[in-house]
Every structure is written in C-alpha cells, then in structure tokens.
Length: 387
Figure 1 (cartoon, one colour):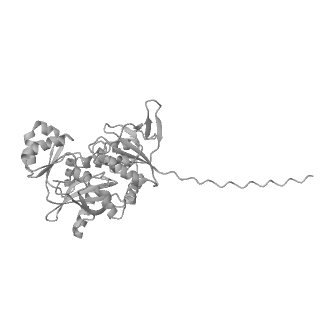
Figure 2 (cartoon, rainbow, N blue to C red):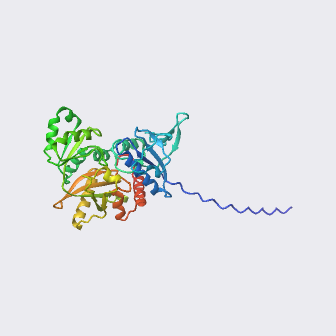
Figure 3 (tube, rainbow, N blue to C red):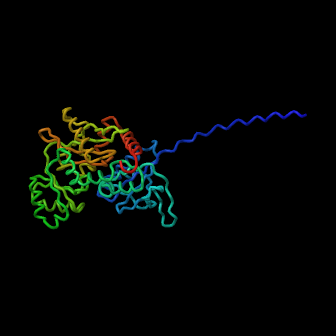
C-alpha cells in the first residue's frame, strides 16, 4: 500500500488591497433664472473650494439664466467676481435632466447626438440658488418628487420666506416684532393704483420699495420724496409683479445665522453680526454688498449681552415660525431705543466672501468647511417625504 503524498503547501495569500469607501455624492446646484444668478455663482465657487479634498464627491451643476441645467467643470476661479465683472453659468456644457422619479437615479446627461446616459446616484443636493426659481420652493418641490435629500428648508418654508408679504404675515401671527409695511399686488396696481399708493404713503417717509420675491438688494429704491414713489414701484415690478413697501426703521442693521440642531436638538443661533454701510451708499445695496468693498461687518456686534441674547432667541423663533430647516439668516433692525425689529428671513443666504452668514458662524466656532460639512450631514440624515 503506497503512502499518500504530502499535501502541497498553499501559496501565501496575497495581501488584500484596501478598498476606499465611496464618498457621499453631492450635487451642487448654482446659477439659476433669478436676478441673483451671479451671487449664486460666487457662493458656489467658495463652496467648491471648501469641499476640495473633503469627504464629499462634488458634481457641479450650473443652471443658465434661461433655465438650462448643464454639467459644469467646477472651476472655482471662473465663478468669482473679477474686476467688477459678474460670473455667469455658460450653457456649453452637457445638458442635464433631473428625473422626477424616486425609483431611478436622478441625474441624466442628455446629449442630442447620443442616448441619454445616467450620471449616477446622488446622495444629497446643495441647492445654492438665490431668489426665484431656486430658493422659493420650486426646486425644493422638484427634489421632493425625485426623492432626493437636499440642504435647506422644504417647499412651504422656502416659498413663504421668499415672499416678503407672506413671510411678514406669518411672523406677525407668531407674535414676532415686525415693522410697518404694505404689500402691493399686481392686480391692485392695475386696478386701483391710487389706492395702492395711498396705502404706501401712510407708512411715512422714507420708505423702501422692493420686489416682494427678490434678494441681494436687487430692484430696491429708498424713497425720500413721494414724487419718486410711482417710479420706485415700477422699478420693483421689473423684477416681480408683487411689490412690498417697508417703513424705515432708524437704527442699527444686525443679522444672525441659524442652523438646524443636530440629532434632533433645537436650532442654534450664531453670534450677532452688525452691518456698517459706507455713507456713500444710501442703504445696503448690491454695490455695497458685493462690488466696492466699502461695507464693514462687525462680528460679533458690540451689543449688551442681554440684547444679543434677545436677538438670537428671536431669530430661532422666526426659524421655527416659518418651519425652516437646515439654515437661515435672520435680519433685524435695532431701533434707537434698543428694540429689535425683525426685517426678514433668508432660507439660503449667500456663501460669498462678503456674506454675513459664514462670517457669523466662523466667529461662533464653526469655520467655513465645517459649516458646509454640517449642512450636508444634516440634510443626509433627514428623512424623505413628510416630516
């Protein structure tokens, strides 16, 4: 009987190549059809820089002024204001479609010469869009239909905060201090212009006339002579048929950032910031905000601790009153007697170098990259559907 051969020793196993975990994928939406297109582009450039080398894979998606969605190269330098020239989304990239179908990957590349190709699943969307057709609930509704998580407030809060008339009515109903105002609708302007002008005149001079659903100080006029009122309304109507007039509140201009709490915690308010506008500007207009560098921002504002705490508490109450999620910037006037007057709530504030929101949070201990990361993590943890 033969002796069985000894088993051949197994070859040593090759060391396993470590597999890098997939990065969460974020679609960064910027540009858009509103008058704040350029501000959105600048914000996007800053966010792109903040996410370089981070735990997130970024898919930059630009929206042209005409509303075309394109896959962007994500060149942060091309999205900056250069020598006073405002950036704009070019329409020469591959066209994208967002499928409003929660059972399919949302982003599809559409090239007229080819069959549409799926770009891939997206874990979360950062809709860094300001103004109409982006910040007003329209894109938020599309993302809800697509079943995609996104940063920021939902459909109702976005729409309500975008329309200054509805926003102020909701804040007043919640018992928050709001200054005198008058809303002029398109129908009223066309059918009873004299009555609309009378209601605005009742506010007294000076009065600020604004598009009801715009931001970045676009289309705003400070009226100090009633002879200029009708022209101011017509200017605002170039941007929005709904116009709001606000009585001037003499005092200091202060702003607070609010973030949704993590793991179910209550919303948090940043330190209070104060805007100091150069006397060369009548008010905090577009040039003062973004172009000439003349505006000074004090962070934190020089306020008595009790006043700062009151303003921060009011900011959180405003955030909750509108049902905001993710983030908001809440703007106040501090009247001469020290009384805070709530001006507006912005559900997608600017992220530019001149923007107050990131500066206020940096002074509160959350630097720019950490702020963007927190917003994305909060959105990723949020459930889909009604909440």
